Structures are given as structure tokens and as C-alpha cells.
Image (cartoon, rainbow, N blue to C red; front, top):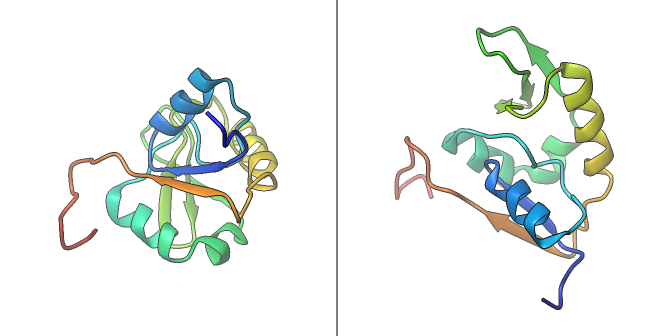
Length: 116
């Protein structure tokens, strides 16, 4: 593997697993979480603008933090607290290499050809 400093924008935990398995630094906040299909497309279409916004955590019945980012919901399934999720998100957001992005989409229920 020659390109080892890319930023991976992923809609679920697969991004984090890939980076971890390759021994690469998390250069993206899109690790250890999942995003529903329509919300992920919204984020991709508005990526720089959306990443300028702050996470707004909301109360849900989930046993992990959930936050609004713009008009999207992000499910921080591998975090135990809002504080931890926010801290990791902000640290990794600063690492994004806007000139070296890879987009990973794992199909989830609700995906349609028209949406993509």
C-alpha cells in the first residue's frame, strides 16, 4: 500500500475496522459510528459545510450517544459517552486531508439506486 495518509469518509464501522486492520491513523471523524443512507448522502453533498457545524447530542433510547450534525443523525455506537464521542470527533476532524479523500459506502436498509 503506497497511499497511507488518506482520510476515509465511511457510513459505518467498516471504515474504522479497515484503518485499524491496516495500522493507519484515523484521519477522519467517521470512525466507530454509523449513519443512515439518506443522512450519509446529505453529509457527502455538504461535507465542508456540515463539518463546520457542532455536534448536537440528543436523547434517544439507544445505549450509546446520538448526535445531530446539520440535518443528519450520527450514531456513535462504539462510544460510551457524549464527551468521548465529541472529543474523538473533533480531534479526528482536524486531521482530514481534503486533498486525499476516500469515500466508502456500505449498503444499508433504505439504500436505493435513485438515492445514490
